[in-house]
Amino acid sequence: MPIVLAIGLGCHNQVGICRQAPPLHYAAREVKREIQADGRPYLSRAVALAYDDSRLFVLDMEEDDIKVFSKSGVFEYLIGRKGQGPGEFHLPSGLDILAGKLYVADSANRRVQVVDTKGGYLAGFRVPFSPHRILALGPDRLVVMSLPSGRDGQEKVLHGYDGGGQPLWEAVDSFFSRDSVYDLMRNRWFMLRASGGEFFLVPGANGRLIRRLDADGALLGETEVTEKYPSQEIDIPAREGKKRTLHAFCWNCASDRGRLFLLVPERTEDGDLGPGWTIAVIDRAGGLEATVALPDRLTRIAVDGNTIFGIDVDS
Image 1 (cartoon, rainbow, N blue to C red):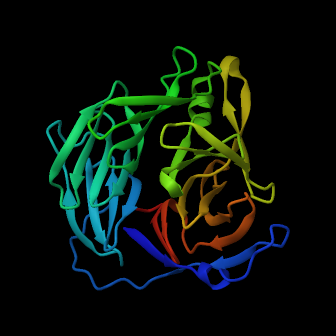
Image 2 (cartoon, helix red, strand yellow):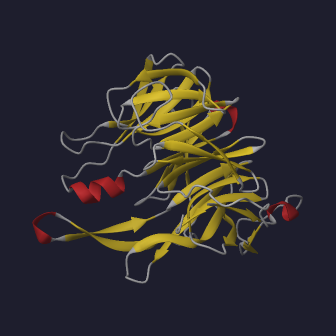
């Protein structure tokens, strides 16, 4: 089930936080949920979160649906089911919301679908790849991220479309080294909405540069996240029995009111890397403004003011 957490990030907004100052430290607490009847559905593989003024939408890749909750965490209804028809999904992997419309990266069906917040089908179009993530910058400007195949060298990973599915542009080359596992980890990216119809591109590994792009995919600038931000290293199996070191940057992330919220990867009990117990709050200049200690390890997050919506590792 989604976890709703409260934090106190608003209390220092009137005081400029100097980038050289030590970061502030917060502890998030879980908000008490409303009473809920038994029989609520469990999340099999939650891969994305989105919210509007009153509801939280959780994309479940394994169940091929969107589970809708109140913003206090109470389940309300389902959207979609497994299939190839309008409003049906097969291994959906990305979700966004804009102006009362849900945009779904319907990965195995190789298409983008648009439904309303009750599940009514509105539109859709095919794409020549398996869409991985989606970001709606406007009703007529969608950014779809693809996962590189790793077979034929570098590929473009960002694809711009209008609302009718007409291709507009492609941007950002994938990393390619012929080591498929390593390349897969290197090519983990996240798209976050920025102001002015722009967006951030955040690396999942091997980089501290956060790019800002416009609605046409043009690079506007890059911000390097401070070295105070914690990261982890792990050895990845490579070709010929060798290993390569991967620098894990963030497990998941969110943006809200000009800040970036990065879910810091941490070591698991078996020595692997997994989602951690800490969110790092990054300011506009790349400084570590604050850290938020979590009561549970989260795999996915969304932020709305002083509220964090999260999926814990047991969901």
